[in-house]
Image 1 (cartoon, rainbow, N blue to C red):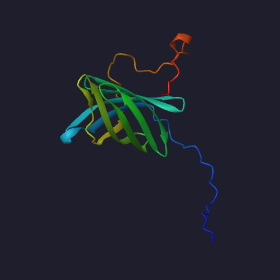
Image 2: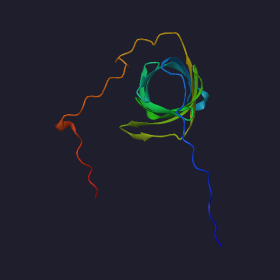
Image 3: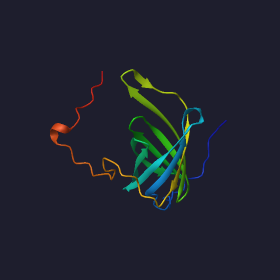
Image 4: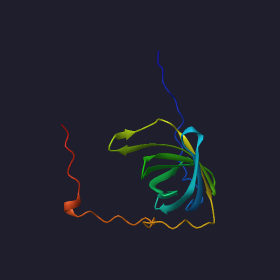
Amino acid sequence: MFFGIFSKAQEPVEPQTLSDISGVYECEGTIAEGKTYKGFVQIFKTGDTYFLFWMIGSDVQYGTGFVRDGKLSVGFVGPSNGVVVYRLESDSRLVGEWTFFSNSPDGIYIDGMIRTEVLTRTSKPMPNSSPEPEPKSRPEPKPSDKPLPRQIA
């Protein structure tokens, strides 16, 4: 007896046609125990990817990500490091879920919770910040700057 799997040939995937989501957004999210936070996020288009710059109180976070299937996935670094996945509801609203870990002299802190964050496009300017968030092109490494080959034991 023969058992087989028959499937239809895959159709080519059309590139996603979304408006450019670059701009300044007001940010509102939740942290532990239902507490909320507010801030600003600026999104820059960088080729096929996006660069994000968060200002929440005095904390600054940076991230990079890309859009697939109507979602912007971003890895971020700053006082804490993590990942956020935003669902693109419209050209002016992104709804996200995020998680993080932080590293300190006492060790790595992970609480295993998923939090929420909503970005809403605004005409307000991004608050003054330092350093300048505009992404710069990365220079080519000099021969002495190249990482050493990875050793496999």
